[in-house]
View (cartoon, rainbow, N blue to C red):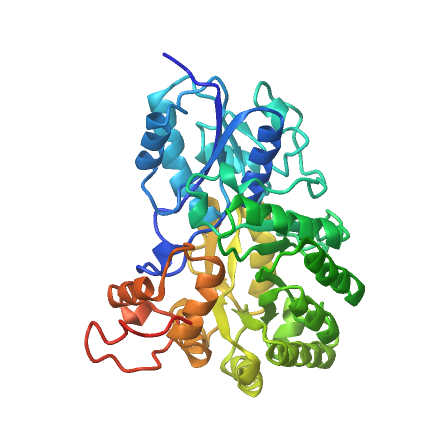
Length: 474
């Protein structure tokens, strides 16, 4: 059997979208920037490297692509990254196919959110994996090509290089990522960064330089990078330095990031807007005082909500699209949800869109059981008590008011209350849809989807299949 000298990373896809299965959901692309960081390091060391995303393609199709490109089989391991528990079934099928095609193929599996909580649990469900890497792996990635180094959940600093998006198969379809910092250290038992301290943000000059380099990778085409950071908490001084550095390198790029609603001041946001910030994902989660305390989001409810309102007002004032994340939590009642709804109504003029969903326990029993015990004390219970052991995904009956079905229906209702098809397209096309995905493509996919499953309302009643053909893109 002839073997190549190529190193291939495969980001596991999904057999079906993680929320609701419709044509729009299957269009979404998620750049696996963690795998790309490892691929970039190997490429800088002189290896022939490629990152392939499974997306919603059948695993057999991805393996066929690797064979047709002469990348499989290889003298090096097949590097499989599992970005979420929803991708585990895809990875299981892909690894079975790879081992069947080449029994001597060595498979290294990473993806800290899935591997880290309980490698033993994962090994039982993914027996084809020869090595499980539970944490970040920049320091050991070259050793993984030829051996099995000592692995663990250790802190890895943000790499000093810019991600090489040219290593991504079909990279022109993906919006790029720029990593700003790592770590969190907030202690949440279910989080793989619970005891990894938050880093200081990378220097503003290095972030601006990375933006310029990524722009070159895309040959001058429009890009909308996602500035990745587990805890993005810049101050005004850093934001000012970024705005100045962006001017100095001569790039004009709109970008997106995420933060807590109480982690950034309006003045900082105003300065970041001058540096190109155009979309921000805000983790509000709830506006119910009782639920804020239950989630341990803040001990000072009034301050939390006041800062959230001030930040949203700044988004409106400085032209930053705010997408607010809302989490229907354990113990949710009609009263607590009404409180959140009233708060959102009061701030709706500053909100571009919302993302709403009921809380889910991710992870095998080793990590999920702690969550489930805490949530049980709040009145919630799992839909399937065996789900954590079987799949690592435990959906919940939140309370007597909100069993799982009612929570899902309420999530859709709340999303539609604040988001229509134009704002939904504007937000999704900024970072998650393919770069060449047009409003016409979107409208066509809307027509092919079950409207009952779509998380937005329609601003214009449908009259025929072509009524949106000439609609101006958002």
